[in-house]
Length: 194
Image 1 (cartoon, rainbow, N blue to C red):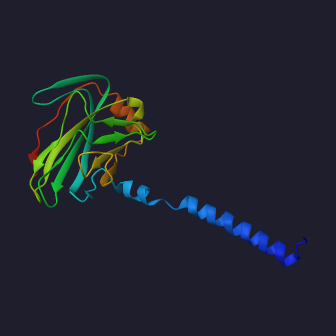
Image 2 (image 1 turned 180 degrees about the vertical axis):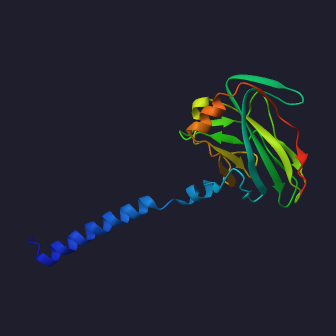
Image 3 (image 1 turned 60 degrees about the vertical axis):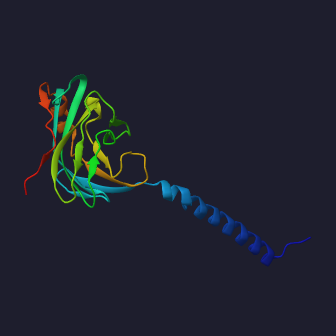
């Protein structure tokens, strides 16, 4: 059987179409991947970040070798990073959980969760802004470029809104934070006056 010029062109076009179709199919996410994806809401220190359950803002970044609350004291060989935060639930009382909050290093390592000192914004009423602080035990080498993660629900892995807040820590600021030697008393949640 002899192929004509038109036959060769047709075969080449079919092969090219199959190749392009395969490339497109590989780049389109499947339905389960879309359902499992979290919805990142980005901001920086000082920016209010709106999520489904409320609005969160990191208002300050501090560090120390020791942190304490009204019940516990914890010391580290690394560094404690304390984030001062404001939280305003949107439609129903909701706790901004210290167990779910994390600091993510540029290399993907996560710091926080269950630690020696658990901190949270207590259950708060919708529309009222509360001030609270979260303490994270970290490796000082992971400070530069890190960002805070606050999920809209109680688990970081749940496919829901998540506030991703750039902490603005450049190498100079990382060195300053890593050199801290003092102690920070993490305050209890308070109502933030308008």
